[in-house]
Image (tube, rainbow, N blue to C red; front, top):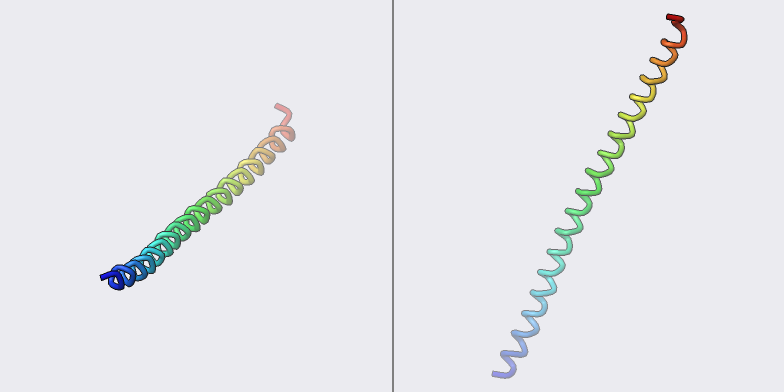
Length: 68
């Protein structure tokens, strides 16, 4: 009976370690997905800011050229 419990403990601990590794990999994949979306949003906002600043500069140049 003691050998059965010892064998079950080893198998159970191996299964627990495998389950923990699977959960860790799922968390890492989710984090990488979150970081990819965050980087895409940062790039999007940077281009929007660049587009707005170019438009603002063009508007100021147009207004300074017209005397009225």
